[in-house]
Amino acid sequence: MSKKAVSQSELENWVDSVIQGHKTYGVKSKQDKYDYGILENASQLKLDYDVTIRSPKFLFLPAVESIASFNRENAKYESEIENEAFVVFGVHPYDVVAINQMDTIFSQPNRDEHYMTRRNNATIVAVDVQTPSEDVFAGYMGTATVEEGFDVLVTRIGDDAYLIDAATEKGEKLIASLSGANDADDSDIQSRADVWEENKNKLRRHELEVEPSEWPELLKKSVESPLWEEKSEKCFSCGSCNLVCPTCYCFDVQEDVNWDMKSGKRVRTWDGCMLTNFATVAGPHNFRADKAERYRHRYYRKGAYVPEKIDGEIACIGCGRCINACVAKIANPVEVMNRLAEEK
Image (cartoon, rainbow, N blue to C red; front, side, top):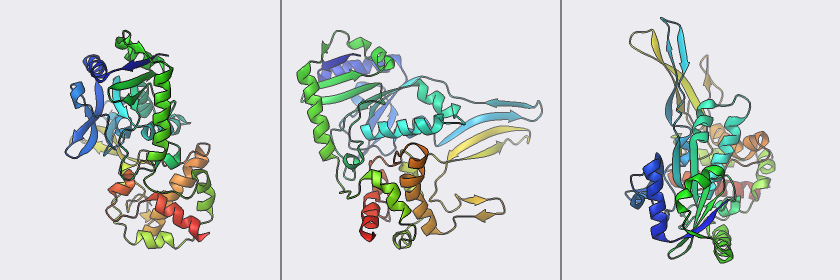
């Protein structure tokens, strides 16, 4: 696969050429924050952002989507699957890890064709972090850098120098317009290695004292911890921590019937385990009505249940979005795990 060393202007020309030929998302300014949006030209793309409001999860699992339509009159029922190729620029390494974790979840038995079709249509251009966010702790989670799981990786290796690395056939096609650019040499590769080592230390804004691999066993011993009641007393059950999390994937499905009472759509929407009625079933019975139980469940889901499902992989990538989004300031996984370790 190709590795190219390019200047800022060559990078921008390449991004513009991609935009001309593809539906292209990228990270853009949104007042004093950053978020993903459709790119119209390279000048809109921000590669030195700290963290995006939303993770790129919404590109593969939209917050609201119609997954089927039906008509009782002619007994017609059809799946609705979005099938359009697109490129997404500027995905940070920790979000690449989250996307790959979602790929594993949604491709397991009972494969989700809606998610997987979007995922297979996507070309992911990752970018190494230039500006760590105030709450990131990816350096502790092993997600500050990635060497796979993307199609192209862009790394700033100097004031006017970038290394562009194609990792897949899709990535190779995407950088075809850079065929005239210089191939990266050993010095460029070493410069990227230096950036990776630096980022593994810089992306540690909260000090985690418990190895992620120890989370499952620690949680098994902490079912009766007073922390769950103590922290949850301040919880508003707003679900913000769920909504901004790149690895939360729970959803609800409802039938949206038209006024003719014969036709309609089946609609899927995001759901969250911190919301009051998340565990309400027929009856109605809510088997997790207590706020402390919901708060505890969220951490068990991240540090115990998902690892059991996918070979020990922790469902937290250290992006810090939950810490920033929580108005009650109780959603910091680092604080929770450090406190549980102190209790043992």
